[in-house]
Length: 146
Image (cartoon, rainbow, N blue to C red; front, side):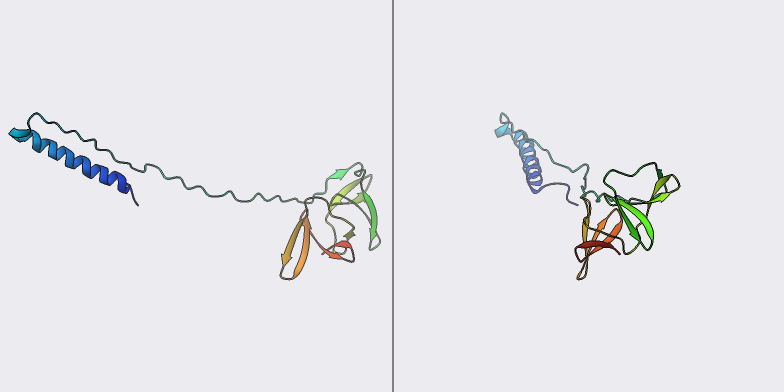
């Protein structure tokens, strides 16, 4: 660990030499009236701060069985394996009693578009799309849950 810079060490050395020569000069009867003053200073690192980039923020969305009284106005109704589902902006719903619950999509669900904010993931030569912790593959112009 380097506490002093090269410049401060040289300044320190020159200052000491000037003080020594001033002391020697005042002891010398020929140079009694001559005074030489030197300033000695040095730089020292007191605290070192290491700044590291912040970790990326990851949002995790969990599916819950919260009950809704009505669906968003932009919902789409579809049937998959003889069950009726509703979809709106990346969220899947199913009718439950007098309301609706959010459900995890099943493999094979397909939608025409993904909402804004989806991510593209590549695994080798395979391209996936991800939104709301659901993975899709693009097939025949649709995004299919895998």
